[in-house]
Length: 128
Figure (cartoon, rainbow, N blue to C red):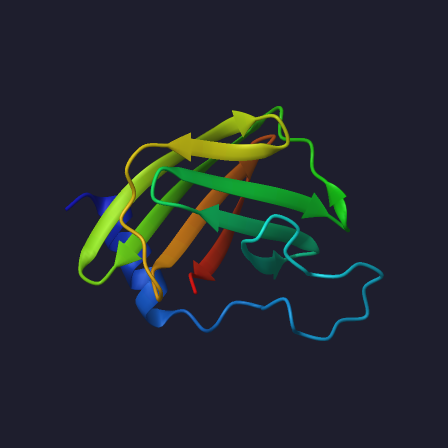
């Protein structure tokens, strides 16, 4: 198992619950999914993960407005049961995206390390 997978599994195992869209904040923007995915907030940035068996998309909103993804990338680690899968996401229009074959299901955990202009951020998701 590669080191990044071990780190991702450890992060998932010891992390607390991520912020959810239902949390109450003093912000002027809502944390609702706009694309049918799961939304978490990290440092005033909303990350919406839309995960399907053949496509994974990650939308970013900065204070409610779409983020500039022209210099962005993301590495996503999926944990379904005991299986892990590493996925590279690249800019495609207004989102980061990967296509392929992904093992997903209710309870699948995902850790995304997103890099924008050389600055990393981490978002954790649990699929419904």
